[in-house]
Length: 253
Image (cartoon, rainbow, N blue to C red):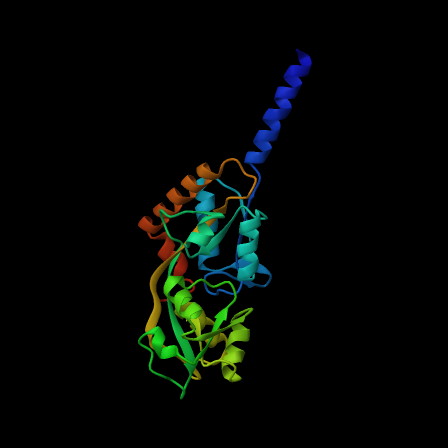
């Protein structure tokens, strides 16, 4: 009887300890002002918003940054509990549970090119013969993927934004796909806002990005975590906390 009681206590202790384990989330470190590293510390709109959401949900959370391809691989393999913030796609739904109730942010994507080299762009047919840069791992939806597969354009992948901007300035590509907020944040940092402009036709408009939980992660309380974080994110959107945090980085909020 005594041995049985001890065994039960050990199981209870292990379960309690597991429930209190910090959530390990990852984010794209090259996505300022949404997620980035300043003085060795992950920060940005998404990071700050999700840190507050976790606090409201009573969850301890550790957020670290990696290149986008690494983020996706970690979610796929269960080497993290979750990630922020990802576009939803059938492929990603196979390895990630999306917190679909409340997006973390919305994105507009366009094509950026050098001043003086603008070209007409109203459909993917206009990109015939063009070389378009893309950060590795970026999913721009089925229309972009179909045009790429069809060969309407050639696509050259780069590891990060600095590399893709250097590729444009060096003549390796004709244009690159980029989030408007993120790209202008980087161009301002590099002093290039007067050298690179974007074409008016948008690749994506108001595309939602979501936090996700890895299907392969060993946690047993995934649904409870999702519900708690979704509730907190919804509260933050309604009470103005989200905009207050975002305004620290982007005045348009």
